[in-house]
Length: 282
Length: 255
Ligand SMILES: Nc1ncnc2c1ncn2[C@@H]1O[C@H](COP(=O)(O)OP(=O)(O)O)[C@@H](O)[C@H]1O
Ligand SMILES: [Mg+2]
Image 1 (cartoon, each protein chain N blue to C red):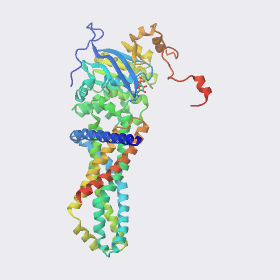
Image 2: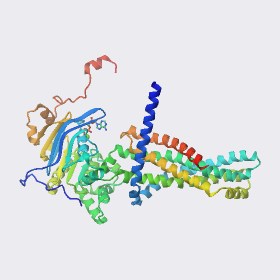
Image 3: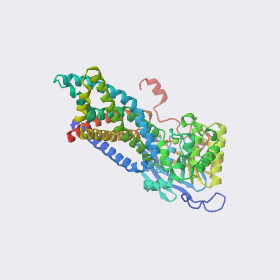
Image 4: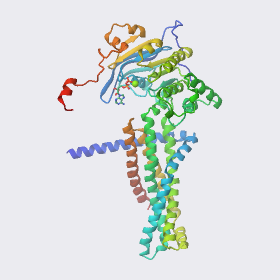
């Protein structure tokens, strides 16, 4: 197996915290639209980092930048000391073997069943005997409560179930860095609670590093060590989630408390509402 | 001036898409050996591409053969040489109609299925998920489908030709009364190995072209429902045009 990401400082053992991911001055634009302009983020090793922000600010884009799926126009993205935008494909693949990622819509492979989906990375990267693969897969499925669904195909799962299977798959290789893109969206309160605890337990028990993108401010605040709030291409606030809740910045309060009016515009830029309704054309 | 500009732009677009396709082709070829190491996936794809097109290939083969029987008989009897019907039809099927029509049908049936399947995998992030699991989608998804198509095409073509000849026999011998002895003996005497090789070569080339176009269109599809639809349409159009152009070039070289 691959070596873990160096020595991990856990929050409690007193060693100085080092950073697994360091993003500095990243600029990225797509289709002539600037998504990030001077983004700085550090993800400490061994902790849970939350990334929050209104939809469409580029949270998914940020994860894709971090994992080298896309390259920034400017700036550096260091993962475990390596600049991901400068890695060759094979170096990138070597790095990614130590990462697990949960995609926003699950992204399960639709031509194989739940069991094979979770077994997929194991079959591709290891030569484990079938009986061990079976044990690992069933353990991971049990953790997300879907061991009984092993023979279903992705088309037979609800959105929330699909995301839980995808979570089991992301954990299959016991990665050192787990990245979750909106893991709680579409989950019922019971599954949400279970998954929330699972994220926390996996992080602490296996000493890995977790990055969680989420809108669920209250839920994520209970498990995250640090959170970043993104808006308009920049980090607008960062710190312990509880501290952010009491922040006196108007923008942070708006986001953390879910208010429609404030510095972040809920509306996409548009001409005046009254005028457009009255003018009749368009 | 506008016209010249437009022409230059189209030319530039054409050259750059041919370039992109060539680079993609090289990438796929690079992954072919690795894909062959897991024959399970390749066999599944041969089965997939072959089984999808088998019924349509057989039906069309029969009717194309029957029409050849009618037209060929009508033409040959004007020269009093209807005994050559077997030879004429067999050469037409082996050298031209078999490979070309099989390729066109393949593009419409298996090609579109490949393009939309891969395009949908792109649109639902399945390809990105594979990349994140450090699995190259070109090796795991594209190469097995490409190889499957390349292997299936000559086999389908052979089936098309056999059934086509049966169709010719059905009309020419059983309905119009061509002598069965001379039908077969003339065919056996005049069709040479070179003719058969020409047919095999053509269908292999069409297999590479049509499979490549299908997997490329799917792989580069815009990740939306509309993008996947456009990719399937483009697959049929580009494959058909390319097949006919390649057919002309190959025929010109080999005659
Ligand atoms: N390939 C792309 N082409 C054009 N625009 C894109 C593309 N990818 C993302 N965007 C735009 O970038 C913005 C950020 O997207 P995303 O990262 O998915 O947001 P979030 O995950 O925060 O909701 C969106 O406004 C989206 O329209
Ligand atoms: Mg997103």
